Image (cartoon, rainbow, N blue to C red):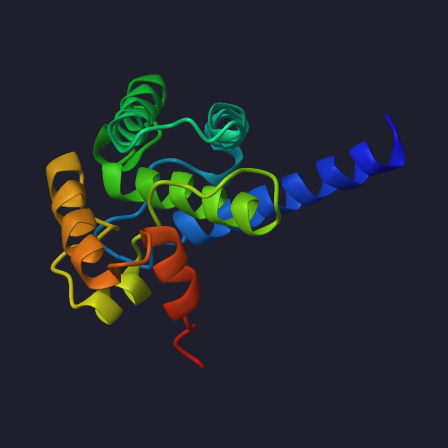
Length: 177
């Protein structure tokens, strides 16, 4: 592996860690990621699956030819796959759609900003974006692609004429800022 390939692989791995931390830290007491009976040492297989999702995101979006409809289908299929594969480990046997959209969208944002993928179709919808846009969408508890699509539609109206990804990048500020 060349030095440039090693640098790229390192950055993508580290961006993946940031993506996982941002999307799996739901801070919602009633909506954790893992089932209460699942101990830390039992989470390795699920964490490996989350990493596989990040690889799939990079691979599927590298050429930039992903429609909005395909993007939502990808998020939904990923949530369903993880829910089926890890039902015994996940809270209420589900990897919720809202958490999945955050994982996919935040990873796409990081990869896009770093120049590894073209502009993504959506932005991550989290508490900061929800509050900024005054949305009635709780990504930590939502398990509905319809609720997500409604939030995207409302965001699109607010963001116009900018794309969602550009709007969020330009408007995003951490709460401490």
